[in-house]
Amino acid sequence: MQNAEVARQFEELADLLEIQGANPFRLRAYRNAARTLSGLPDSIQDIARNNPKELLELPGIGKDLALKIETIVETATLPQLEELKEEIPADVVRMLDIPGIGPKKVAFLFSELSIHSLDDLKAAAENGVIAEQKGFGKKTEQIILAGLEHLSQAGNRVRLADAKAQSDEIIHDLDTLKSVLQISEAGSCRRRKESVGDLDILVTSSQPNEVMDALENHELVKEVLARGETKQRVRLNSGLEMDLRVVPEESYGAALLYFTGSKEHNIVLRRRSQERGLKLNEYGLFREEELVSGRTEEEVFQTLDLPWIPPEIRENRMEFEAAEKNKLPELVELEQIRGDLHMHTTATDGTASILEMAEGAKSNGLQYIAITDHSKRVTMANGLDATRLRAHWKEIEKVQSQISGIQIMKGIECDILEDGTMDLPDDVLSEADWVIAVLHYGLKQPQKQITQRLLNAIRNPHVSIIGHLSGRLIGKRPGADLNYSEVLKAAADHGTMMEINAHPMRLDIDDIHAAKAKELGIPIVINTDAHSVRGLEVMQYGVYQARRAGLTKKDVANTKTWKQFYNLLKTSR
Image 1 (cartoon, rainbow, N blue to C red):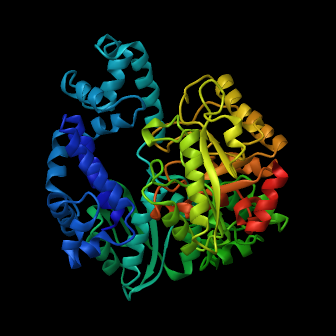
Image 2 (cartoon, one colour):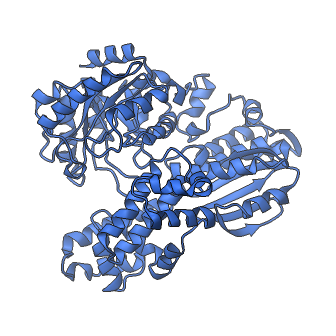
């Protein structure tokens, strides 16, 4: 039972109770507990089972919440949560993912208009019923219709980090079986797509039934949906579905290749096979009935006159042309990252001090960081005005004198305001070592207006980088409608860097536009946007996104040493 799963259940409980109109203090307690657990470096399962009294020492965890944590750890669920899920349909909870529709409005739609599904909501909006309700109006109705369109496109996909955590745990546990010879994830999770529809696991084993029994009885599995001699489909407690396939050793590589995908990549491989008088499927590469290769992916690729292609770039975009020319990129690795230039502290909405963040980054092997708390426009995060920011920078200088082995840059995450100006004046920004310009508000402005806001920031001589460019939240909020071509060209012209925000909800910019930025010579910086020491661990997901874009160490600016990066920053300005 992972910390993230316990936190998820508390968040879900708070959502359901909020729809019911529960006491705000009660809701805050559950959300604070979820935040505590998400940022906890130790295993909540180990604490609950071995030292349950230590639960009471965690911030915001009292006796009631401690008991609930113990219940989730031991039973994988919470009776109160299950009861609420019986009372409130899942689609009603999904309405909370529509931007601008809060719990009070969802509660009204559910209880007063008897809207129990997304289809009911769409029909009510299209028929003008919602616009007639007090506190809604035509604008809200249009927001709902646009939000429903986004939800339908997102489907029931799960963010990569959530899906991978579940896949990793199950693979780890199955791999302890002596009968398991080889095991690997496949599908879009292995390709590190930003969201995942379902999970795939491939196994070679001398005892398929033992492996399937182990999966059926795994604590993350809710029910078995289908089971045959070599294939099993289960539904996890989270709702995500997983396929387990047991394949022969001589077919393992071909099956891994086939079930990893993508579909478009596999089509090209099959065509390439046919051109050589061969047939490729999940069982192997055949000439007539003879198995030519299939034991490993490398073997199959080699038979097709190709080097092994990393899963992240198997999308039929550039990989085949590069492979044929022996120019496949040496994709960037997590171990090559030397700096993290977007993080928050208790000065705004972070949970750790400047020193704690610096020590956490140093323990992760980083050479330099930038402390980039919010500017004043983000009032909900206690954003900094000029006076507080300058005092904050003095604190950074003080901390720098207390710690060696890591360089701390004085930064700011500065909002690009709705009118296109920066949230802080130039004389303040000029004193910063590092300025991230971002969009947090006005994301629904017309393309021309929001593009101009970004262009203004890019042209500002004090702005170092554009952070989470589109402002999207994966599966929850679409990005702003901006002219990427114009923005990226301006960034290239003015030496402004672009961020891949590694937070699993953002992964922004996306892989397509990161690849375009590389083509234009724009330095990419992969940042965590961490709000806690544990938040620094999401760097891996930004690296996955960079790899999907085909980025190498050379393309990512924060793979440079501190001296190299400092010189790059001076040159770009």
